[in-house]
Image (cartoon, rainbow, N blue to C red):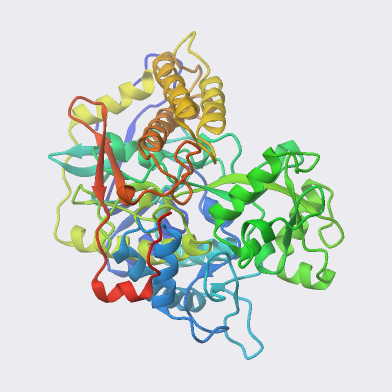
Length: 583
């Protein structure tokens, strides 16, 4: 390919081309597990990440991996796990994905153990499993409260030993599409300013969610909806975008760590929630399951205690595990012990933690086929948090790590099967020129600071599209998003591409706006309360809304929203699930 010079103070001397059978965009747990599958199938795989290998949001899934191993509660099995998924998803999950996860999660955990993961053990040497909210049995295989870190490091070790090619600090601006197929992607190596064209026969998106579109979130900096944005622009269908999980317990103090996750393991190991009056209020909200009820139930209870004036000094509630011995806490919850000691100066063996709901996970994302993780574009696949279907209206704790292992593998397998019978397609020069011009367009003398717009956008989402929603605030959010879309045309940066955070902000903001628009419009459409989606003006669940909202770009470039009924599960599976009840 020819060299290009940008007409501004930018050094980007030439475009580098990389060819591969399968391109994996994202290097968290789902991306690495997909890449391992492609490699083991004997095909060439290239993995790219805008962060560093081994640095992904996966590490924030601390409590464990949900899998019906039956090591602690022998009566557990895939059918019980299946029922828990459907019920927690409030009956709008993809039943086939729930079946696959229930059946395959145990083998993926055992595989991870064979890869070298060091799980906590039962007295007789089997993988230990702990209780988690809304799980019928003790089901979470764990490594203290650092399970996500153990998973990512174990998979990273497998990637490195297989000598899988990866490019880190590589920002993918867009997928490259020709004749209704994805033929590759365009990227910028942020540390050098070089442009890259990745040519691939099949592509897997594993970029995570959009949690950073909210002001207070447990999500790491990478989670800006890049995969959702690039997929949407390529014509991919999204599903359930209104469904945002607010984890009940994020740190509230000091301000610099506000929103940082306090793992559900604390409650799983016996932690209790108290208000400023010392009341264990979950006895009122959920007398039977108490602190281990579904995340949406506990999060709303925390929110209500805070908003009704029974909160703590810093606007939270108390999470207390001091009734356990210091040795127990340090053994079972070492990361939480260190986190509070270092960031808040709180010794959780002696003092209560201050916590409040924080944006944690997106149930919505790219709509995929259950068995293959294929999108509506035949050679584009998606896995992990960027994909939708499994979790429905709310995700069970521990199912995120099971999800990335089970469906990361399946996405890699399916992409390999497709690529084996496909050919590389030459990338038209016009597509490359379009991407270069897109990047060049952000270099302006007097461009608006993208981070000012990002601040206003995240404030808008937290203030108006939060844990409890209503028509007035959702419409206000839509108006603000429309204003920001107009202002986005004027955002810009100066300097060179290399190490340019202003350019990164411009690129991320484009994707964040897509997620925010879809989330807000879908939330306004769904006139009921279901799972993580709570409408104060429609407080009850509505049987007429046992449906999924599908979102995609229409021929005129505007977002289209369609509603479709949930696919019914087989009759023989109904016995595994409690009958849905409506008030």
